[in-house]
Amino acid sequence: MSKTTLSETLIKARTYQFEHKNDVPMEQKPKFHVTPPMGWSNDPNGFSQYQGKYHLFFQHHMYSTGFGPMHWGHAVSDDLIRWEYIDTALAPDTPADFSGIFSGSGLEVDGKHVLMYTGVQLHVKDEEARRMLERPEHDFTVFMQLRKENRIFFQQVQCMAEGDGRDYVKFPENPVISTEMLPEGMDPENFRDPKIWRGEDGVFYAVIGSCDMEHDAKLLLYSSEDLHSWKFVSIFHDNKKELGTMWECPDFFFLDGKAVIMASPEQMKGDNVHFPNRSSSACAIGSVCEETHTFVKESLSLIDHGVDYYAPTSMEDAKGRRIQIGWMGNFQNRITPESYQWIGGMTLPRELHIRDGKLYQLPVEELSNYYANKVEKTISVCSEEMQIEGISGRYLDMTVRVKGGDYTSCFVSVLGDQDGKAVITCDREKKLLSMDRSSCHFVNDHEPVTYAPLEEVDGELELRIVIDNAYVEVYLNQGAQVMSNLVFKAEGGLDQISFGAEGSCEMTIVKHDLVMK
Ligand code: FRU
Image 1 (tube, rainbow, N blue to C red):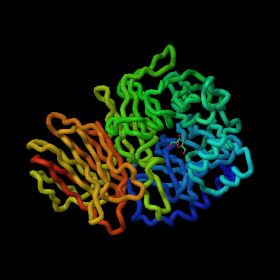
Image 2 (image 1 turned 45 degrees about the vertical axis):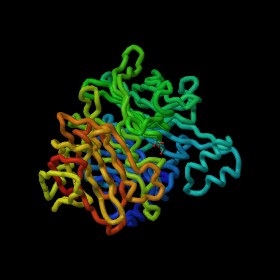
Image 3 (image 1 turned 90 degrees about the horizontal axis):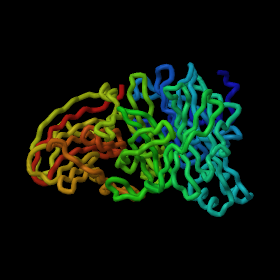
Image 4 (image 1 turned 180 degrees about the horizontal axis):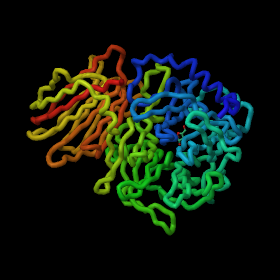
């Protein structure tokens, strides 16, 4: 593809990206989690394999650490762990998407890399409102205020592009799905995040987030024979006000004999254990009714109990694995230090399974190719908090098996120093897993403690804790529950790990450092 197809907006983004690629000190960054080279990032997009390589795009506003007109940043990898950042793939530069390239998905089709995304068009009704939005960055409050006053309105439409894994050309007929193709009663301002796949019948399908005028989620199914001409099929899933409002970033796939929807409902109401009181991501397991093209739900659960988790998306790779990656951040609890010139990043890629009707998630096995310095210890733990020689650090993958004794709760604290630590507690009596970062004193941390249900398996618990600088992911009992939270440390902060219990128990600890090759 020749460079002449690139717009000015895209060339500007790529040039900026090139000129600023070394601005961020590497000590601030995780090594194994994808983060933007600079500026703002949110949702993972277009997660797919193309010509054998893994491709991951992400919502990106490179010019500042605020939410601004979205582009698609782009990273590629051979093994899902070591990523190379390449040129920004998509910029808001056509009449269909001039205000932003919102989330979407990707697929290899007949040798081409096909991307489907939401084009955003912001229509401004008066000059003063236009001036207020003219700044290259503006936060949501400006949008929300102007919207409330009915001085701006959005349109969200679905667009496509195809390319060679580096440069992409948008379809000239974009949008391929306009707001006129919405079923009656849907809100044209909330129609986004298409997830495309090819059915066994060879037909392309896309599930897209939308809501009615009361903001209640409807996931819409569209189909196409040729990627260019699309038609509405059905309301694939109707939330009927069960969980949150609009469901963002829907995903759909079959796994282990079940049909699965994953989506990110806004404004959930919950008990803060099974579901939180904020936006987060949920997984619905069930089947599909072939006659009506609708999803039949059997269960609904939270995907990740951490506060820094949202908008996951998945793909099936050439090895037949269903691999999912989420944004390890959110819009509501921004704790990244103000001085950082970057914000946002992804979870580790996780392999998914359904067992006994429940979702299980674990980091992809490729992570173990980066293991070094194994330490294995079995210790008796009682009320005294203890540290173990050889077990500390900021880049590691550690599994702790807990059994025996009369303990009522036990804990592992990580990233500890004089300023605080993150404490991961298994409360056997309350049947709660928690992670408490309140001693870390983060500015704006409105949710320093997160919770998940805790169940023992044959009288034992298994905690797997992956630490990658500020990125802490906790997997309970082979990924039956997951909790992802950010824990930023001051430069020079210590990386102490300690163990303790109320009552007594035995802990078998296996720790591997994670070393990037
Ligand atoms: C979810 C989301 C998507 C949207 C994108 C915009 O985090 O709000 O619905 O496409 O982020 O960046």
